[in-house]
Length: 114
Length: 113
Image (cartoon, rainbow over all chains, first blue to last red; front, side, top):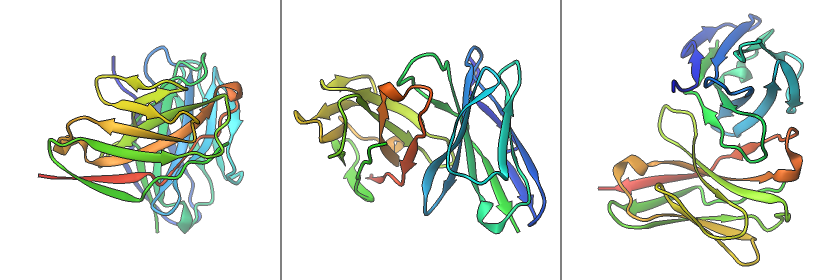
């Protein structure tokens, strides 16, 4: 099976712009969750989608949004970028049907905001 | 969600066992203990998880204290490929569908050749 694919791998934006990141989960997985990773904060949960519905949301401002398509692919959008949004953005997929399931992570998108 | 505490960094010699500790003194009865690791330039990967009993798989062993307030990930024979950041997290099985996992900063394991 192909793993979780995130595109693009690297992205450079300037303050005020918006960005869209993409995540293709493992075939058959219906849950996609997104995380922000920074050196000081570690990995922090952004949100989770399951069957095209946002099932859970972390403590991030409304500038961070996402969606999931019928094929379970997910996109994450950040509007009005700030310098502090520079981070590695990771998505993870899982079947989404049992507690404690393994999460399968992609390699991430490294976003730099200048 | 209950928090975990891990040392920031550890070193170990190649081909020796490694014991990575994790404290979770506020663990609840429905919390699973999960371990993930993140190799350089990659996303985290699942290592092992357990609830009460010790667990073994091809990658590692998980030793859980009797009171469940701490656990230890054991790599039986470390190789250079085991150099990574190791995360210990708690996942509440009663919180399914409402998890807000936070991995913290983990333990950076360095393997000395």
